[in-house]
Image (cartoon, rainbow over all chains, first blue to last red; front, top):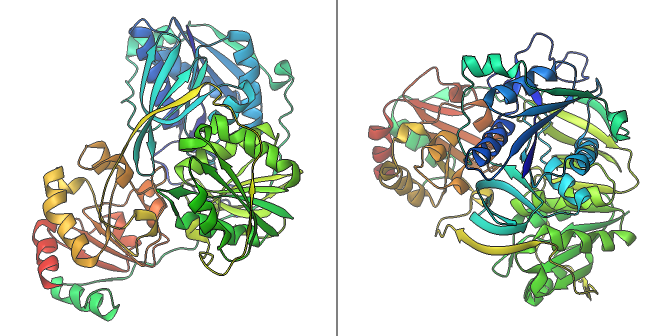
Length: 249
Length: 309
């Protein structure tokens, strides 16, 4: 069984984003970029399935600028087998990404597609569910546990009140939550080895997908800033404050 | 514009997030509702009373139990034949279902809107709330998820909607519900609590959550939250997590105990009316957003605070 894992190049988790002065977006010039953290978890899960003998091949896909090749190489260094890089300089929306992934899934016929539940740049949380819809297949979103057994996969999901478990007929789509696993670091020998792993270069046109955005960004601004308030010296002063706010009797 | 709003309900009660979504939908036009589940007659009845609603579509049947998106999405797509916009609260269910509906309609969804700025124009947070984008949809129909903290709640009473049963039996489409482990708590739910006491990694273990955080929360009638670090370390279950990828909360008072204030955590609570921070590190970023800060040892401060309230 093949496992397909889409990975996105995004601003590094530890970088504080800065809004551009002209209100057109967030300034990404000279900013450290990394693989979306949820996608790292997806790559890790796929590799573990292969190590358990459940999966036979892990294919990663990245859709983005030419530099997304680095993101593919990172996944290959972690242990993915090969990569597909779909290059475009447009900001591709989840719907268009899902359409490209659908075309790739039609070609590759994976048993599972494992995606991060959301990218930490646009925070959309859509692509996996959209891909499932386009493929007409079941989805297990926000997964904290994934178990494959025969033709089905059992997914434990993080939901508002706790956990929920669903059983899905494969092929199925899974999106990862934070506690699914802890992604490994790539070792130096594996980073070297990743450089010679196969990487296919494609464009959205190869899959017949129009990536023109459906959402027009009017402006991007900074959120209203909170100003630091006061510091109280001790608990008594804090209790007095709470009482004056009517929080405590 | 005719809108269709997803009714989020649990054990027969309509959740507050639904009421905020109704308010958002009312800014766009007529508000119709969809109630799905098994044995949801009472929920549908309650939904007709929400102020300002028109038709309440009801999909009642075993196939809709646990509202699995594989069954629910095609049913909503059918209803979207005569609606212009589908709005769901940005809850776990809303986020699970809405994009599936959007893709089937060939619509690019607008996620987690904070405000309605025009017929097809909305604001939404990006980059963990470090930027607010105003976006305009160019699609013929709208699919939107709504961040509940951005909108007032519609009144639960005063409406006179009419119930209309959804035709068709529905299909499970390859997915089945196995089970759930839902946390049971007497405390208020995080997303609707007026006061929240949250603990971070500094709590060190789950025992300290029980003996330090919970007594303070119970004294204040507060909900209990946690930072990602505390959840990852296993001190508390995942549904306690407040942050970019956890729950988004905006209570009257948010008390952050031993939480340093990573941007991902701030993304989930910085719209709280008053933020109180207790941390031993006076340079912790949480103090930059806190209205009231107290620097010191939480193991001394919190029990003292609890006893003096």
